Image (tube, rainbow, N blue to C red; front, side, top):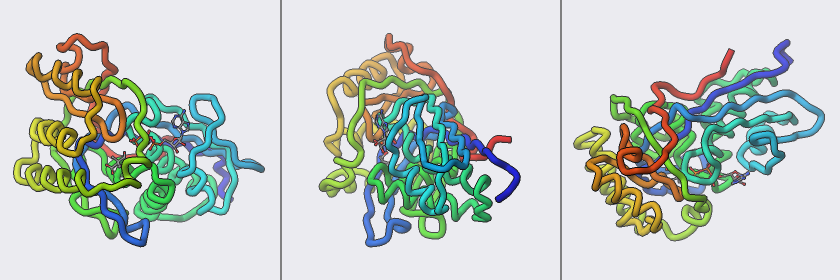
Length: 278
Ligand SMILES: Nc1ncnc2c1ncn2[C@@H]1O[C@H](COP(=O)(O)OP(=O)(O)OP(=O)(O)O)[C@@H](O)[C@H]1O
Ligand SMILES: CC(C)(CO)[C@@H](O)C(=O)[O-]
């Protein structure tokens, strides 16, 4: 053991605008391609070794399978405290953030001696095995406005990014089950996602990412009515908005949602990836 008895990591939120799903027999090479934004609103994860495992989110005890997978990999039990500025189950990658934050913090308190890539792989595999995500973890490790060019954990996946930053606004109308969508038939959404990725790579700008994301949500058949109404209202007010995959949530650039008369949460794209806090 190190003499450090507690560690805390911060992981930015992540909204996916469009994606395609890629499954192999191996969770490290399974993942998604796509585009999205990391957010300065994120998740703080504190790990303290303990006789039994106890995971709390916002002060309430919760089941969070990806976090439990991470602790199992360290062969450890701990009290894991998750504080999220973002709603859970609504397309902001909270489960991926919890897994990645738990991996970074556990490595410190359990003297794991794993490298960053090893920890990202561990959290990515935990998310894939739990069925809660395919690409949030690698995006959250990267930061900025990540483009997932090839799927999977470090060493398999390839990331690029849109070199920019922006104010971001978001609203949430409720949850959507990630597992139900990604464990179902993904043929249609993946076709739409691949097309969007090709076009984003030709013109990697934030406005283009938002436009391609809007088209993706429609083509993939994932739009829900209240999300569609909000996106249309932002467009009518001259702004750029899209649906956060996979939730009943809308994110917009700059003051897009405020200009359309909504009362959104406000944050920014996050310039860097997940990290331990001192
Ligand atoms: N109050 C809660 N509401 C929703 N999920 C919860 C809650 N408490 C714990 N969980 C767990 O959190 C995880 C949520 O994962 P899910 O992938 O649906 O959401 P997310 O990571 O926030 O968003 P997304 O993956 O859609 O970007 C699941 O493992 C679920 O069991
Ligand atoms: C599947 C997903 C949309 C769930 O948040 C995300 O993990 C992604 O883009 O791979």
